[in-house]
Image (cartoon, rainbow, N blue to C red):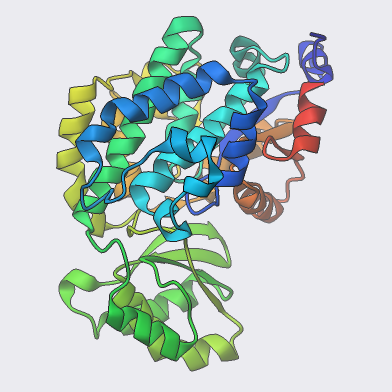
Length: 385
């Protein structure tokens, strides 16, 4: 296999990289199916699907996974996949989105980039929401058996994280009342997270505060993700988010503010998920997920603080809390780009959402850095040939 042109440029000092992985809410099946059917990363799928199968008996049939998680069957036979709503449920989607982005990572490593070279020429990295977990795996820089052993543990980690998240927020589906109100308001598929697009954060906070005065103390709305100056996510119960829209519909329409529910079944990045932290810690310890933050080979910047994860005394507990409870501010992990000045950002998907969010943030910084998405065949080819 010939050496990628990008690698030659990196070795000559012309190219430097920044790595990122995307977050929740992306449709994953078609992308993962294509990677699976290619047969090019068979060992990856043997390990990850095997890890799911090892744990499936402990979680299938539960409130979190009432129809199980037979990922190998779904990938072998598209006619067996459950409904889109079930594929979007927390325990399924978190697990399978991680598989998808790490499959892109593995596919990149099969196309002339070794993990050592990829990290050697990367100035830093981050991940959006659950993508931060995947990025810590990449940053550990394992190879050989150690790589696949860690891959199995990361697969079990994310499966149990989704499982415990749904147990803590057991509203897997909208209630009849939620569905009726959504229909009345002209909305579809109410979920516990919603993108509110347009206006600035202060304006949306005013509206959230106004609705929160009418809600019970345990059903408040939280501004949970700040994706760009005009893009943020609200997390709460479906009923609370519908109440927000009903109260402010005229304002949202008049000010051209969009209101779009996400494909998820838990209010991530909010205090409403606090109940999942302690139960998941027991799972994390049981499966032996105890990687050390200071073993990572490159900086991994936190979306909660902007700090390098390598400075932490441990890894697993902070990752858990950051996904479940911590507020995400996408400017924070990208601020180092102002000084790092890589020539390219490499995005491992899934989809294009994280590319778009980063492009918006770079524009606000006054930076123009090309972003190559490995979920795009043309862009992966450009990076690996």
